[in-house]
Image 1: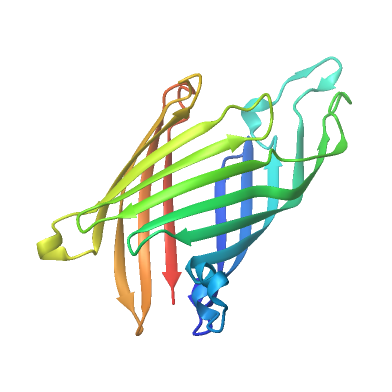
Image 2: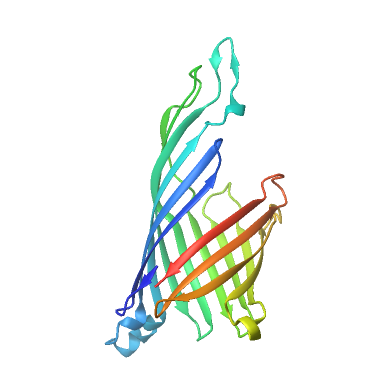
Length: 244
C-alpha cells in the first residue's frame, strides 16, 4: 500500500488458500481518497473532510478436482469433477472519523461481480460451463483506538434470505509496550451468526511492525481460526504487508 500527499492511497493484495481438492486465489487493487484533502469546501460540506472513500477491484480464480484421493472410477468412467473458475468483483466503502480515536465504516461487498465456472468429468455428469454471482454483503464496522488496546466490531448484513447475518468482534493490544513499543501486537477475535448463534469461530494471533524508509512499515501477521461447526477446518493464516 502507498499513500500520497494529495490524500490518495492505493494498494495491492493477493490471497491464496486451499489445496489440490480446491484452491482459490484473489487479487485486489484498492484505491481510496481522504476527504481532508479537499480544502476549499463550504461550511455545509465540512463533514466531508472526515470521510474517506474507497473501492476494491478484485480478480478471482479457482482450481479444483486435482486431488488423487478424490478419484472414483466405475464401469461408466471417472466421476471426479475437475476444472477451474475465474471472475471479478467490485467493493465500495466509506470510512467516517467520529473522533480522533473512533471510526465508523460501511462497505458494500461484491456490488458488481461475476464468476465463470468450467467443470468436467469422465461420465459427463459435471455441470460444464456456467456463470453465477457471489453473495453481496453490507458490512457496518466500528473501531475504537485507546492507548492500551484497539477494539473493533463488524456487522455483516446479508442481502440474501438463505445467508445468515454475522457479527464479528476483535481486540488488539501491544505486548510489553514499555519495552517493545507497538512492534509486537497480540490479537483475539470471535464471530457467530447473529440470530441463530451458530457457526461460532474463535481466532487469535500476533503481528509485528518494523519501520522501513522514512514513513514506511513492514508487518508480518499470523492468525489461527478455530471452527466450532466445521470439524477439521481450523485454519492458519500468514500475511505480509508493506506500507509506504
